[in-house]
Length: 113
Length: 456
Image (cartoon, rainbow over all chains, first blue to last red; front, side, top):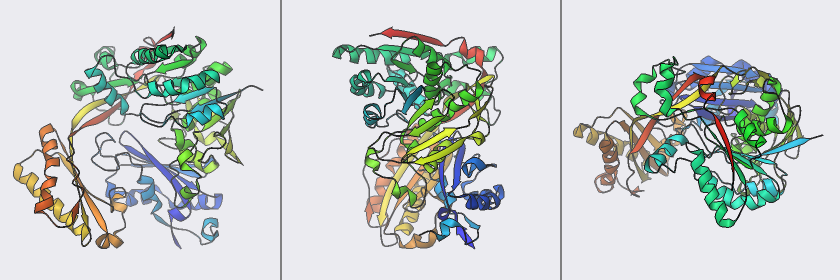
């Protein structure tokens, strides 16, 4: 089934020079395996295409059930020269949580009250 | 077994120091590590200094210490803070003045040598290219427009200041985490090539450097954020560290916020690039090595840090003038709130074009619809919004144009679409800065580092 990331994961983003960076975290190991499979550099590039970003970098961290995502060239040259309201990229993580992936309906977070 | 408790201080210039009372009174901290400098703060401080040579430091350090020092002294708490900015000696003078008036005693150290704005030509002549780390561009292209340039120093001068007996250590630009690693290396006598212990200190410093973000603030999530208790009294995080570098991460009892596996790992990856090679002046950390054990009740055990030898270079971050931003904003109510914002944007764009203003770039956003979510905003209810604000910005090299842009917006009040709000004054031009990260051989910087301790 199609599942938006906000139902099964949490995320925070920040800025460094012209990069936006995101930590995406699964609540449990089963979900982490799904994130690792579904949240690919290609899918991320497509999801953030409207921001006009450069290369996407991605590292899985098994020890903390997380994906580290870096969007290069995402901040109009950096927070101090950006014209955007969100010049610091704090909401890039919220944008990511809107991404939909294929996930089994059996994931724990989809079945907890 | 000896442990050392380091508490988070501020997380940025202007952050609240009120939560530090709980850390000192009930958190048992021995050190407060306080971060007053973002990538951009030095640009603000440089402007202060141009107006007044005695300025150029983060001004919040003085009232913070004036308020907390009696409590800190009673509890034998020492402060390490980078509020020295571009002028640590000036910051010390200001603190001395404040303390003398009150008859307080303290030993205050300054760490200097990080600012290299005056040394750019010397460094280039010595063979350092100072090329942009990401683009490889030559620094000559922005040389004349540089506003500040500072190298990130490590924890060694901080440990040296503490060894000299300083109660308060005032630095300029240091790696944020060095504010924590310095006290730990000093207390435990860690060797500077003990990479795993260095990595442990770096980890804890990184977890502490953003104040409330390490204890449940800004917990990015749907729904979960609402379960964080008592934001109004959120306690800043504390690391209780053992000699081997492992630690209990927690916060003062009786405060709001949350320390858990979830809140800590969000902070761990915050503003990190490659997590397997997290660079600092003192060590390179592999975050993949870390172990977290959530004991519940706002207690998480952190261990396992693995480090690789420190880099041969230090990072410099410089900032240069990069034009001016003009900003205008206007709000419209239902009906057709969004459509009226679009119409107003068209009108402003026509006015700008007719004036022939030199605009390099522009941005149109709809506050209440897409100003934070950008292209990922959901358009389903766009045309039924109760109200919507238009925000437009331009980048130009001409300051007068940036000022004039803001002055266009009030005209929309009587000569634009109806049901208008928020004409609360005109926004002045704002200077834009480009950031220039580059690398430099560490001995070129380290030979100029000076640690000086004085008693008030």
